Amino acid sequence: MIPVDQVLVQIVNGLVNGMILALVASGLTLIFGIMDIVNFAHGDLFMLGAYVGTTAFLASGSFWVALVVSVVVMAVLGAALQVTALRPLVGRDPLTTILATFGISLVIQNYALWQYGPVPRKILEPVSAHFQLFYVEYPWYRILIALMSAGIIGALYLFMKYGKHGIWIRATTQDRVMAAAMGIPVPWVHTVVFAIGAAMAAASGVLFAPTVGVNHAMGFDFTLRAFVVVVVGGMGNLGGSILASIFISLLESLATIWVSPAQAVIVSFIALILTLLIRPTGLFVPTPK
Amino acid sequence: MSTITPPATSAAERDLDTRARGDGPSAAYWTGFVVVVGALALSPFVLPEFWQRFATEILIWGLLAMSSDILIGYTGMVSFGHSAFFGLGMYGAAAALLMVRPPNLWLALAAGLVAAAAVAVFVAYFSTRLRDIYFSITTLVFSQIFYVVIFTWTEVTGGENGLTFRQPPFAVPGLFSVAFTRNGLHWFVLAMVTLSYLLLRRVTQSPFGMVLQSIRENEPRTRAIGYHVERYKIVAVMLSGLFAGLAGSLYAIQNKFAAPDFVLFLISGETVIFNVMGGMGTLVGPVAGAAFFLLMKEVFSRVFYEYYLIPVGIIFTLMVIFLPQGLLGFLRRRLNQ
Image (cartoon, rainbow over all chains, first blue to last red; front, top):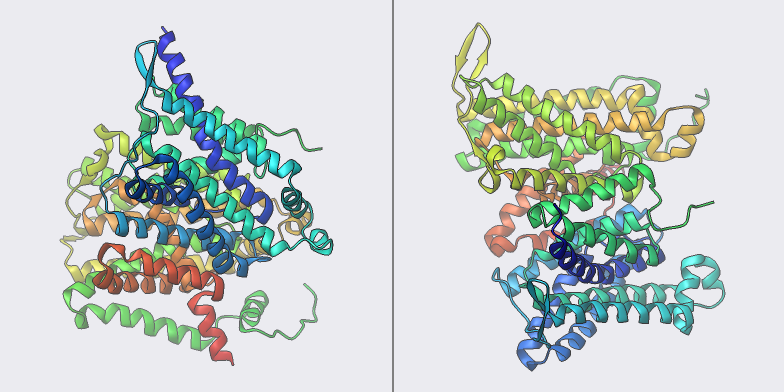
C-alpha cells in the first residue's frame, strides 16, 4: 500500500532539494567542464558560504544582505584559491587537482570548525509563512529556495549563451589553445569561472542554511552528492547535472518514506552504480556518436 | 624489448631499467633494508612507551599506505575508498574474535582478509570500468556505502559505538599460546608488514607489476599490445584491498575495537596523503609518508589541538604543487645532484 499523500509531499521535497543540489552541482560541473578540475572542496565552499552568511546575518539582521555578502566574499575567496593553488597545476594530470582541492577542503573544514565551533548555527528564513500540503504545514520558504535556485541557474545559462564573457567561457571549454590565440585571456577566464562556481556554492549554502543548522561537516555530504550527480548526469554537462540532481533528490526523498534519511543516501549510490553499469557516459546526455 | 638501451638519466629510470633487465637488487638496497627493519625491531628497547605504540601504529598505517600505492603509484588509479577495505578488515577480525571462543589470532586475520576481499571484489568489478577521476569518485562512493551500512546496522555492527573485544593471544596451533606483550605485538606487526612489503615488492617487479606500470604510463597502448587491461585492473584493486584489509585487522587486534569512524572517508583521504607526502610508486615512500604525517599530526595537535588539519592541509596542498614526487622523490633527486 503506497501512501499517496506522503508520496506527493516527498515529491515536493525532492524537487526543492533537487534544485539546491542542482545549484551546487552546476558550479562543480562548470569548473570541471572548463578546467578539468574536480573540485573536492566544492561542498566546503558551500559550507563556508553558509557560515559567512550566518556572520553577515548576525551583523545585518537581513537574509538578503547575508546572501549578497556571502556570494561576494566567496567569489573573491574562490578567485584567490584558484590563483594561488590551482593555477600552478594547469597542464598537469587532472588527478593532481583532486589532490590539491582535497587539501584545500581539509583546511576549509577545520578552519570553519575552529572559527565557528561545533554547535550548528542558523539563519532565519526571510519568509516564515506556511501553506497546507496534505498533512503538513509546508513552508513557503522552501518553494522560494527552489525558485531562486532555478532563477540563478537560468541566469547562468543566459549569461553563458548570450553574454560576451559567457561566450569567452564556452570558447575556452571547446579549445583552450584556439581561444588563447583569439585573444581571450584564458588564465583569467579560469579564475572567473572558479569564482562563479564558488559564488554559486555560497548562494546555495545561504539559501539552504535556514532549513538546517549550519555545521562544519555538511560540506562533505554535498561534495559527495554533487559528485554522484555529475557522474549520473554526464560529467561536464550542465543540463544533465540539473536533471540528475532532481532525479537523485526525488529518489532519496521517496526512499525516506520507507527507510531512515541516513539510509536513503544508499539509494542514490545505487543509482550511481546502475548508471555506471548501464550507461557510463551519464543518464541525461545524448549517446556519444 | 630492444637490445639497445638508451642511457638512463634519472635515478628512477635507472631503477626501472635494472628491474626490467631482471638484475637482482644491489647489496646497498639489502643493507638498507636490514638496517631499517633491525632498527624497527630494536625500537621497543629504546623508545618510551608512548612512542613505542606510535611506532607500531606507523607500521600499520604504513601497510595501508603501501597497499594503496599499488593502485595510486603503480597503476595510476587514485583510490579514494581505501577506508572500505581497511574498515572491513577491522570488522572481519572483530567478527571472528567475537564469535569464536577462544579468540584466535590467525582466524581473526583470515576473517579480516576475507571480509576485505569480498568488498574488494565488489568494488573492483564496478569501479574498474572507469578511469581517472571517475574511478576516484566511484571508490569514494563505495566506501561511503559501506560506512552508511555499518553506521546504521546497529544490531550487527554496534552502530556508532562499534565493537569491542579482547586481544587474542599469539599462538601457533598445537605448540604454544602466549598473551601479547606490547613488544610482542610490535614485533608481530613488524613481521607482517615486512612480509607484506616483500610480497608487494615482488609483485611490482613481476611481469604482472610491469603490466600495471604500463597501464599507468599508457593505457591505450597497453590494450593495443594485447593485454586485457580491465582484468589487470580488477586484480590490482583486489590485491590492494587485501593488504589494506590486513592492515585493518592488525589495527583491530592492536586496539581491541572496530568503529565506523575507520570506514569513513577521512581514512581514505589520509591514505592518499601518505602516498603523496612520501612519494607514489615506491612502496617505501608511502610508509615514510605515513610516518611523516603521523609525526606532523602529533606535533601540530600539541599547538593547534584538534585543528591540526589546518597546517597539515596547507602543507599537503603545497607538496602537491611543489613536490609532486613526495619526500622520497625529493631526497632521491637531491642525492643525485
